[in-house]
Image (tube, rainbow, N blue to C red; front, side):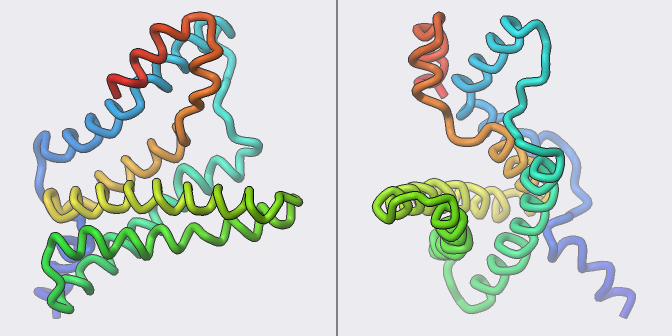
Length: 188
Protein backbone atom coordinates (compact mmCIF):
# COMPACT_ATOMS: atom_id res chain seq x y z
CA UNK A 1 0.00 0.00 0.00
CA UNK A 2 2.78 2.46 0.88
CA UNK A 3 4.49 1.70 -2.41
CA UNK A 4 1.31 2.59 -4.32
CA UNK A 5 0.88 5.79 -2.31
CA UNK A 6 4.47 6.79 -3.09
CA UNK A 7 3.63 6.61 -6.83
CA UNK A 8 0.69 9.02 -6.45
CA UNK A 9 2.65 12.29 -6.79
CA UNK A 10 4.11 11.13 -10.12
CA UNK A 11 0.71 10.04 -11.41
CA UNK A 12 -0.75 13.45 -10.50
CA UNK A 13 2.06 15.31 -12.24
CA UNK A 14 4.18 16.11 -9.21
CA UNK A 15 7.39 14.20 -9.97
CA UNK A 16 10.38 14.71 -7.68
CA UNK A 17 12.48 16.23 -10.47
CA UNK A 18 14.35 19.49 -10.47
CA UNK A 19 16.10 21.67 -12.97
CA UNK A 20 15.18 24.14 -15.66
CA UNK A 21 12.85 21.76 -17.52
CA UNK A 22 9.95 23.34 -15.63
CA UNK A 23 11.05 26.91 -16.31
CA UNK A 24 11.17 26.61 -20.10
CA UNK A 25 7.39 26.33 -20.60
CA UNK A 26 6.83 29.28 -18.25
CA UNK A 27 9.34 31.36 -20.20
CA UNK A 28 7.57 30.39 -23.43
CA UNK A 29 4.21 31.51 -22.02
CA UNK A 30 5.76 34.79 -20.89
CA UNK A 31 7.15 35.32 -24.42
CA UNK A 32 3.62 35.01 -25.82
CA UNK A 33 2.65 37.97 -23.64
CA UNK A 34 5.59 40.29 -24.41
CA UNK A 35 3.24 42.96 -25.85
CA UNK A 36 0.82 43.01 -22.90
CA UNK A 37 3.73 42.85 -20.45
CA UNK A 38 5.37 45.82 -22.19
CA UNK A 39 2.08 47.72 -22.08
CA UNK A 40 1.63 46.85 -18.39
CA UNK A 41 5.15 48.08 -17.66
CA UNK A 42 4.46 51.36 -19.48
CA UNK A 43 1.14 51.76 -17.68
CA UNK A 44 2.82 51.07 -14.34
CA UNK A 45 5.34 53.80 -15.09
CA UNK A 46 2.66 56.29 -16.17
CA UNK A 47 0.41 55.48 -13.17
CA UNK A 48 3.39 55.82 -10.82
CA UNK A 49 3.18 52.28 -9.49
CA UNK A 50 -0.53 52.21 -8.55
CA UNK A 51 -2.18 48.83 -8.69
CA UNK A 52 -3.56 48.29 -12.19
CA UNK A 53 -4.46 44.58 -11.94
CA UNK A 54 -7.79 44.22 -13.71
CA UNK A 55 -9.84 42.13 -11.26
CA UNK A 56 -13.12 43.52 -9.94
CA UNK A 57 -12.72 41.94 -6.52
CA UNK A 58 -10.29 40.03 -4.37
CA UNK A 59 -12.58 36.99 -4.57
CA UNK A 60 -12.49 37.06 -8.38
CA UNK A 61 -8.71 37.33 -8.26
CA UNK A 62 -8.46 34.28 -5.98
CA UNK A 63 -10.85 32.37 -8.27
CA UNK A 64 -8.91 33.24 -11.45
CA UNK A 65 -5.38 33.02 -10.09
CA UNK A 66 -5.59 30.13 -7.62
CA UNK A 67 -8.78 28.06 -7.65
CA UNK A 68 -9.34 27.83 -11.42
CA UNK A 69 -5.75 26.97 -12.39
CA UNK A 70 -5.40 24.32 -9.69
CA UNK A 71 -8.81 22.70 -10.12
CA UNK A 72 -8.85 22.82 -13.93
CA UNK A 73 -5.34 21.46 -14.32
CA UNK A 74 -5.96 18.66 -11.81
CA UNK A 75 -9.15 17.69 -13.67
CA UNK A 76 -8.06 18.17 -17.28
CA UNK A 77 -4.34 17.42 -17.25
CA UNK A 78 -3.66 15.26 -14.18
CA UNK A 79 -6.89 13.25 -14.52
CA UNK A 80 -8.25 13.31 -18.09
CA UNK A 81 -4.92 13.08 -19.88
CA UNK A 82 -3.83 9.83 -18.17
CA UNK A 83 -7.32 8.39 -18.76
CA UNK A 84 -7.09 9.15 -22.48
CA UNK A 85 -3.66 7.54 -22.61
CA UNK A 86 -4.92 4.51 -20.68
CA UNK A 87 -7.80 4.34 -23.18
CA UNK A 88 -5.23 3.73 -25.92
CA UNK A 89 -5.18 7.25 -27.34
CA UNK A 90 -1.77 8.08 -28.74
CA UNK A 91 0.02 10.91 -26.92
CA UNK A 92 -0.53 13.12 -29.99
CA UNK A 93 -4.27 12.37 -30.08
CA UNK A 94 -4.56 12.91 -26.31
CA UNK A 95 -2.88 16.33 -26.65
CA UNK A 96 -5.60 17.37 -29.09
CA UNK A 97 -8.63 15.61 -27.54
CA UNK A 98 -8.10 16.60 -23.89
CA UNK A 99 -8.24 20.36 -24.67
CA UNK A 100 -11.65 19.94 -26.29
CA UNK A 101 -13.05 18.95 -22.88
CA UNK A 102 -11.26 21.96 -21.40
CA UNK A 103 -12.74 24.27 -24.05
CA UNK A 104 -16.24 22.88 -23.57
CA UNK A 105 -15.92 23.40 -19.81
CA UNK A 106 -15.68 27.15 -20.46
CA UNK A 107 -18.93 27.36 -22.43
CA UNK A 108 -20.77 28.07 -19.16
CA UNK A 109 -19.67 31.70 -19.55
CA UNK A 110 -22.53 32.00 -22.05
CA UNK A 111 -24.99 31.88 -19.12
CA UNK A 112 -23.15 34.72 -17.41
CA UNK A 113 -23.26 36.75 -20.62
CA UNK A 114 -26.97 35.99 -21.09
CA UNK A 115 -27.71 37.25 -17.56
CA UNK A 116 -25.86 40.46 -18.38
CA UNK A 117 -28.12 40.97 -21.41
CA UNK A 118 -25.73 40.31 -24.28
CA UNK A 119 -27.26 39.55 -27.69
CA UNK A 120 -27.30 35.91 -28.81
CA UNK A 121 -24.93 36.54 -31.72
CA UNK A 122 -22.46 38.35 -29.44
CA UNK A 123 -22.58 35.45 -27.00
CA UNK A 124 -22.05 32.89 -29.78
CA UNK A 125 -19.04 34.78 -31.18
CA UNK A 126 -17.52 35.31 -27.72
CA UNK A 127 -17.99 31.67 -26.72
CA UNK A 128 -16.56 30.37 -30.00
CA UNK A 129 -13.56 32.67 -29.53
CA UNK A 130 -13.12 31.57 -25.91
CA UNK A 131 -13.52 27.90 -26.84
CA UNK A 132 -10.80 28.34 -29.47
CA UNK A 133 -8.21 30.00 -27.26
CA UNK A 134 -8.91 27.80 -24.21
CA UNK A 135 -8.56 24.73 -26.44
CA UNK A 136 -5.26 26.07 -27.83
CA UNK A 137 -3.99 26.71 -24.29
CA UNK A 138 -5.25 23.24 -23.33
CA UNK A 139 -3.24 21.66 -26.14
CA UNK A 140 -0.14 23.55 -25.00
CA UNK A 141 -0.73 22.54 -21.36
CA UNK A 142 -1.34 18.90 -22.33
CA UNK A 143 1.85 18.85 -24.39
CA UNK A 144 3.83 20.39 -21.51
CA UNK A 145 2.31 17.90 -19.07
CA UNK A 146 3.35 14.99 -21.27
CA UNK A 147 6.85 16.40 -21.85
CA UNK A 148 7.65 17.49 -18.29
CA UNK A 149 5.23 15.50 -16.14
CA UNK A 150 4.87 18.66 -14.05
CA UNK A 151 1.43 19.68 -12.87
CA UNK A 152 2.94 22.63 -11.01
CA UNK A 153 4.38 24.07 -14.22
CA UNK A 154 1.07 24.07 -16.04
CA UNK A 155 -0.78 25.44 -12.99
CA UNK A 156 1.67 28.36 -12.93
CA UNK A 157 1.33 28.85 -16.71
CA UNK A 158 -2.48 28.77 -16.38
CA UNK A 159 -2.41 31.32 -13.54
CA UNK A 160 -0.13 33.56 -15.58
CA UNK A 161 -2.45 33.38 -18.60
CA UNK A 162 -5.46 34.17 -16.41
CA UNK A 163 -3.59 37.13 -14.93
CA UNK A 164 -2.73 38.45 -18.38
CA UNK A 165 -6.06 37.66 -20.02
CA UNK A 166 -6.41 37.90 -23.77
CA UNK A 167 -4.22 40.73 -25.12
CA UNK A 168 -6.04 44.07 -25.33
CA UNK A 169 -5.25 44.82 -28.97
CA UNK A 170 -7.28 48.04 -28.93
CA UNK A 171 -5.47 49.24 -25.81
CA UNK A 172 -2.09 48.50 -27.34
CA UNK A 173 -2.89 50.18 -30.66
CA UNK A 174 -4.34 53.29 -29.00
CA UNK A 175 -1.49 53.67 -26.49
CA UNK A 176 0.79 56.71 -27.10
CA UNK A 177 3.78 54.38 -27.52
CA UNK A 178 1.79 51.91 -29.61
CA UNK A 179 4.61 51.30 -32.08
CA UNK A 180 6.79 49.78 -29.37
CA UNK A 181 4.04 47.79 -27.65
CA UNK A 182 2.59 46.56 -30.96
CA UNK A 183 6.06 45.42 -32.01
CA UNK A 184 6.41 43.57 -28.68
CA UNK A 185 2.98 42.00 -29.18
CA UNK A 186 3.89 40.78 -32.66
CA UNK A 187 7.23 39.41 -31.42
CA UNK A 188 5.34 37.41 -28.75
